[in-house]
Structure formats: C-alpha cells, structure tokens
Image 1: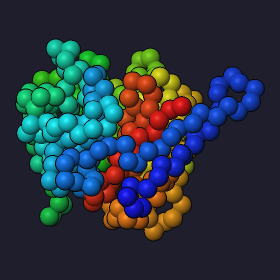
Image 2: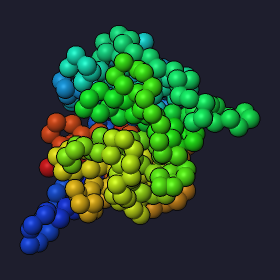
Image 3: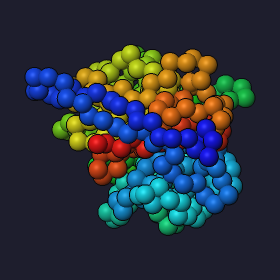
Image 4: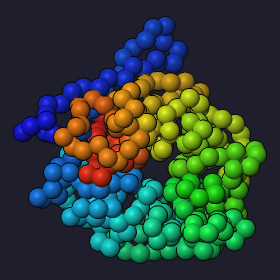
Length: 328
C-alpha cells in the first residue's frame, strides 16, 4: 500500500505516576491511519480545524477543503459515516458539550465568516452570534485587517460562551447562553500579555473551574478565573501550544511544532508523544502525505480525549492528517 499506508509504528509516552517510587510506563500506540476517509478520498481533506467526540463515541472532525468539507463524522472504530448537514466548513475551533436543555451540541467559531455557532449534532442551527456583537473598542481597526479573527471556544458550566480573538487582538470575549454579549478581557497588555491566545478550555480539574488559554507565541498556558482574572502561568517551554483536552487530572496539549505533551494537575510533564525535531517539517500545513512518517507529528492543531482516555489529534495540513493515540 506504499509509504502513506505503511505499517503502524508505536509512539510511547513515559508517565511518572504520582506517589510512585519509580517510573511506570504508560504506552500510547500512535496510529495515523486510524480514520478511514470518505469514499474516494485518501485523506480527510484540507484541515485547519478541530476534533471532538460525542457522548455516543462518534468522532467529529472539521475539514475546510476536499470532497467532503464541513464536519465529518466517524464511528468509534474510525469508519466514515456522514457529514453534519449544513455545518460550516471553517470551524477553526469547536467542542461538543451540553446546551441549556442538557443535549449535546457543537459550539464552534467560524473563522472565515467570523461567527460563533451552536448547532445540533444533526446540523440544526440553534444559535449564531456575529463577531460584530463585540464592542468596537475590542476590534481591530487596522487598514485591511478583519475586525476580529476568532479562533477558539469554551462553554462554562453555567452556559456562558468564551471565544478567543487569537489571530486578532488576543482578547477573550464572553457571551451568555442566549448569545448576549457580557464582557471582554485579555489582550496584549498586562497582566495577560497574550501573543496569540489560540484556543481556550474550561479546566474542570479545579474547583471552582478555571479558564485555561494557550498563549501560543509565548509557548505557555495561562490560568484565569471565569471573570478573566489571571491566576498564573500553568505551563511553560511548550512548542507553540495550539489546543487542549482534559481527562480526569490529565491535560493533553497539541503543539503545532510537532508534538503532543500530557501534563498532570500540578503542571508536571507526564508524557511527550510523537516529537518531531525536524524544523523543516513542523508548524506548516505543507507536509505532503508521501513524506509522512509513522510515530511523529508535523503540526498538531486540535486534540480530544475519548471516554476511554485515548487521544485523537488532527493536524494543520492541506491534505488532512488525524491520528489516534491508544492508551494501553
């Protein structure tokens, strides 16, 4: 089947178990051929998006190009099932979480349209918030630049929606569950000092829950309370952190510069997976399928856990590359 469908190579991450007197290995089997793309396609398609798992275990991947753009849906075994009807083809960041009625929904940011959307898993449109809802004081007024350039999204337990202007002015904007604008905070000034606040997540490992933001160009993660007050830097010395996923006390970080790192509740490094140290291959969407090597990443951009604690990673890539890291 050639190099592209070559044999599976296992990428191992070593985990130091808290309280243990010695290191015990936790193995992740990295399978970059886990998803079976739509009929007639060798890969999922041009991807600058995200990935999530529904309560039923189905895998949702946002794809901006190819024969099946939009949000593709795969079975837990990786078989293509369908596309979400009418879903935008430019969901740069999205999650699947419960809405006000307790049912699961896709919450996403449409990067090209600059809209915040809530849609049902069946494609039913529930809520659309135009980025123009953000006050002008927090919008880019530079000539030839978009007013906002939204990139990431999170939904708090009370239903409030947080979005990052990660390719714009680095503000975080807050809306209530009905889409009404509430507040903005963050930005490039102190105490946030963001430089590309790319994605955001609700950190459920703490009580009360916190906001956790990827400050990508500073290679760090920043903790805030739900009102945006900075609590501190959670992790540093990462490699362009792009997306976050939480499972129990674990935090998985997709790093655009060719790596996935798993951190513990205290910020300690538990595992590094698929590290690629070839500077010419990483942080770019131009690595073609014939150059892909098993066991390494090129540009991780979206990440999620499934119910069993396996990781799914989608990469920034013109052809689209998705890997599963199976927890042994």
